[in-house]
Length: 475
Image (cartoon, rainbow, N blue to C red; front, side):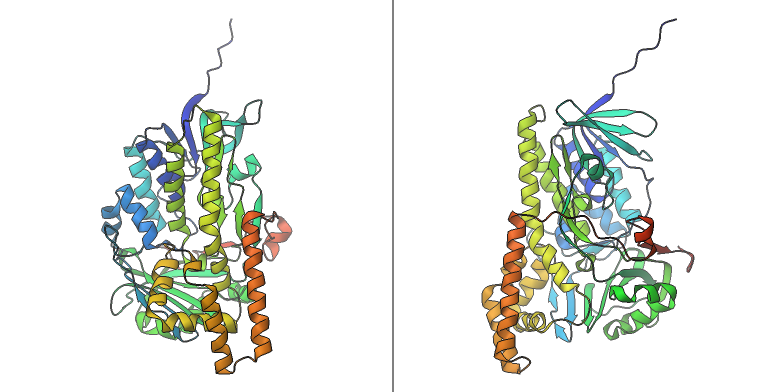
């Protein structure tokens, strides 16, 4: 009796691992460009994931390009047409500029709804979507080039290109040996929840408040809900976690500007939080592979740009891939390297600004004076809030040397610091900026920091992610 022939592995142009925002949107773009695409994810959909679900206007623009703007509107999520940051009493209130052919603002949509919208579009575009499918390895040829993935159960999928879009704890990044660089340890933890019955006067806005060490965000979401996120210093995590949900409710109640909105509202669903959100970049391109979204880069979540960045990166990566001939391996690899360099140039300035804004404790005098200067100039205020904080412009478009000198003069005029102290602060800031520019050219490779508490002892890098669904019934 002859033995059965082993079938050849199925081959596709591109295998995308991870079917959420970055992966699904990339798959849609590639399918529309004429590539055969297989989209793989170990989760089922719809399902939730660790996310505050805020999408800045730049991300909504990408959704518009994907043709799903009507689906977003149908969730009941209003466009967030204003941003109302207040830092230590300094108001940076601004409206979202109505650019031609752009949506009118950002939105906030629960990931159970949002991810499923993109999955459905991907399937309509001819993408082969394989859910509840776990990648266990990558295939490589004799040169070390990635040529496909191995699935649990023994199946293999051949591909000319494998893209990891599988989030912070990326399996693909591990399998290809992608290193982390320019790593930052988070100084805050985050918890958030939804409220029903909140009343927000005026247009829907993103509210961003910092008072002393306290940092709080609030914004309207889909289904008539209002999302609130608190982000205390990491040294408070143990006490905060041990006293949930009271500690969360107390932190929200301490935010005076939000009180009128949620005075008669009811917190619904579970609390979600994490104490482990280090920032990083990863090697994001190699022979036959690339990383996109959180798998390749992550910054502090308090600026709420993760979803928008994933959409922007996926759109850009699809363009680089479409411009290459996947049958020409060298040309494909060059295109991926160019995309990686673009990603770092695009992400680095905002990466450092997010870290600066999310440092624990009270705001430093120089940062506070810079914000005063921005607040006093309507043009700068609009550019910073509407363009920089929505990642439509680089922070360096606002945080110029001239503004730094103006802030220094303000510190002296107010008498907060003397000339020597002010000069020292400016010198430290200039040195820091030079170091950051150097890191863009010569990145510093380092492993991710260990998470706090028991997770570090157990070696579970992601055990800081906490869900408290047992405290309040999810709806």
